Image 1 (cartoon, rainbow, N blue to C red):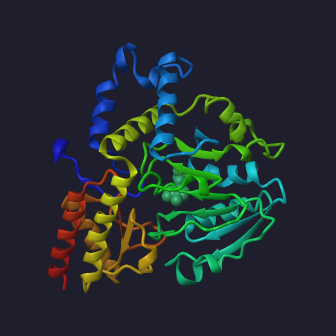
Image 2 (image 1 turned 180 degrees about the horizontal axis):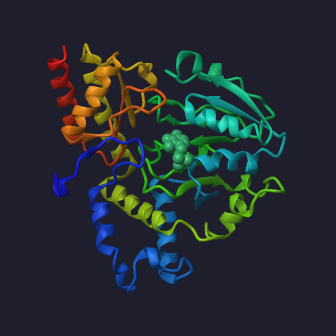
Length: 362
Ligand SMILES: *Cc1c(COP(=O)(O)O)cnc(C)c1O
């Protein structure tokens, strides 16, 4: 590959489109005639104002965000949102419903308990997080301030294949590992948040999309930088924003628009995932435990059943230029993260390697 790059299956930080990296590199020394790098520029400058406004506009356009929502670029990762969501929203009845379908939604649930009553509306933990509960299984409380879900489970490799109906209770979704991978009906959500380092940009910026009527009800002792309303009023510049990351989101979304937008991403991503799942299902060595209708399109997990063989697979794959296929440290096995920037050729190379490995280790 160009520049001697590898196929990087890391769950995050993860691959970015090569053309985006090239553009960022070309603009690094002198950003569009400003005589300075984007990383050296005042966030209060006219040039930077254009960058952040362009990024907001592109998020709205690419994701078809309806009127009545604000787009924020915050810091602290998705993990900060685990606390910011309750601090901003858990102020009516002081309770919220959490659906726990993996490690990150579990962390969000735990964090929320510090701020009020977090109800466990459903969990797939007894089944090792191998499925997403159906609508009928959700024990939703009518008076909840919101319902929280994690739309794609990065570690266990599962995804919601439906948007739960929460009635008039706002739905909050962690979309860190699936944002911009396919179209979503934003109007079904009160808050969507996503750490950038999976499918959007480098680490350090978190995209938060908030329905405007959900702002201005934060806990009185909330730190100002954590208050959605304060950040929205200041166009995400109450304090110095993650300038470079926001610029990179703009470049990535420009790339997505040039490539045909989220409908096209959905087609490509589903085709890549099918290639890999078909190979796993046809294999006698590899298997994937996730219920078929809940399988993630972004994070594909698989195991051989032997820890030694798994380790050997990861080692030899890396030698073949297929890096970071090791599963999350909490679950082991393998995980191939195949976000937007992973070309189909990378998945084909992985599948070919799996077939070769299976023959050699039968
Ligand atoms: C990676 C990830 C997180 C954690 O993100 P940080 O930026 O490290 O806080 C949370 N939720 C999901 C779904 C993730 O994939």
